[in-house]
Length: 265
Image 1 (tube, helix red, strand yellow):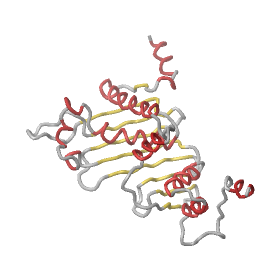
Image 2 (tube, helix red, strand yellow):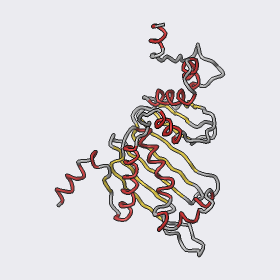
Image 3 (cartoon, helix red, strand yellow):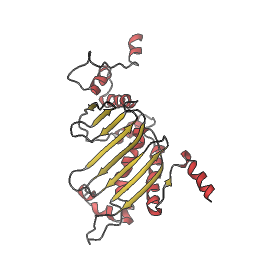
Image 4 (spheres, helix red, strand yellow):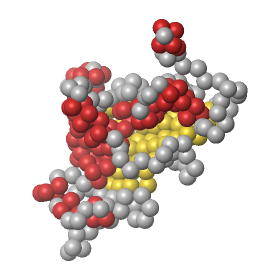
């Protein structure tokens, strides 16, 4: 019994033999956990963590984007989003906030600088005037771990929704929702592609995780403190667009910008 318990802490995956041919690489990794009674969602999360640990090396750059035709397509009274007095922010807060959350979660890093342009390009109100909030946001994000990338949020993707993320590392590339055949695709330095299949999900699991944390009196996987760093980034993007300058956010991680400001002063 003690030996079996110890073996559960050791992960091994064979290259060729001893694999179930009807299962993908990810499903083979999950199989021992399924036999041990681990819930499927937990198994996928654990497998994702294992595969992320070095599968593309250190993340150097990334690009992520989310575009829809706008809130009028999914909200019964979507036009209230267009009123700056009611909504304050547009596509940046509606879509961009989720992508900033995602990049901080995937990279394990926090945004420390943002250079952004927030625009209203095409959305019109009932009087055919451009709406009061942004319908597009383009942001360059610099992370405290050394990586940097771009984030785009748009309400002017008319037709099929656009939702994709790419991470470029020292050992390869990971594409998320960029392929029609697999939700996650990894290309290594030898140009070998590994696709990871998952069942179609209609729920993000974020609310379920939050409720479970409340019920079991534990810290959620993503805490309110981490969510606050995302909100600081959102407000930093707005300031950057207004001033035309790069803005420092989450200042506890930053010293060089403040030192440069003192020297210039």
